[in-house]
Length: 138
Image (cartoon, rainbow, N blue to C red; front, side):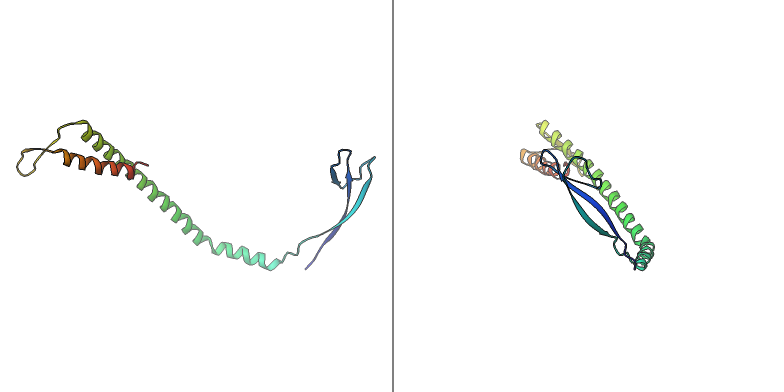
């Protein structure tokens, strides 16, 4: 392994405002302190880099499956958000309809007879629709 060491001269001085400065060039008209700073290049092993490059190519299928999983997750979240929007609108419609009309009626499927809802049944329907609004309208 090769290690390269470089020496560079740096100068340190204080300006008239008391600020300390560092430079590679000696300033004029200032009292300077010469600093010797040695820098060493880091030891870089060659073999692990090749091994790392090989491992990156072997991870590609996992990475693709990860990206595919993220895409599927986003699609599911988008679908769920759309379903929640529809449920929200339906629940709001029910709340508005049942709160605005004083007398509500339904047609009995078996007899075809008109049945009027009493106040407790209407209040129960409004309450469950309001719960749906709180749940789906975020």
